[in-house]
Amino acid sequence: MSDDIDRSDELRDWYAQDDPDGAVLLEDIKHFAGRFLAFPTRHHLVVLCLWILHTWALSAFYVTPRLVLDSPEPGSGKTRVLEVLALLCRGAKLTLSTTTAALYRRIAAAAAEEPASVLTVLQDEADAVFGRTTNPQAEDLRALFNAGYKRGATVDRCEGDAKKMRVREFPVFAPVALAGLAGKMPATITEP
Image (tube, rainbow, N blue to C red):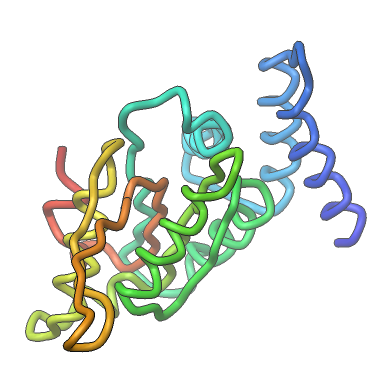
């Protein structure tokens, strides 16, 4: 797979060109990803390719759609899709388990870079996180994913010790792909 990884580096470098040909890039992404993934229709691969490009052109968008990868049973390739996305998306971070505090700090750190960068969140096993209804951590994460679809969205958190406590605003605008079993993800994320 080392040749494939080298090819993904070429795709990443393509975006930096002055006059890129979008059709050629889409075809290259489709060819690369299509070698490792199988979808019910060819349209699924097209959506995936467009979403990958979206992560690289995020500065041109006010909103970012959530990519939900779900299936009725385990072992259908959701994690493989996230692995391919990790190679091709801008600033990708594949995670199985993360705290909300760590995630919004990562998003803020990427946004603070000069020039501004992007953190693309690839959340695997999202059904396990959101399947526990009594978990306050899951509710915080759902709120972050729900609010972070639009530019300018923030969460307020207190920082510092008791004597030097201050409120800090963290940006949460970021592309997010969620993989998990169907029917176990929050409706606020999956429904338009």
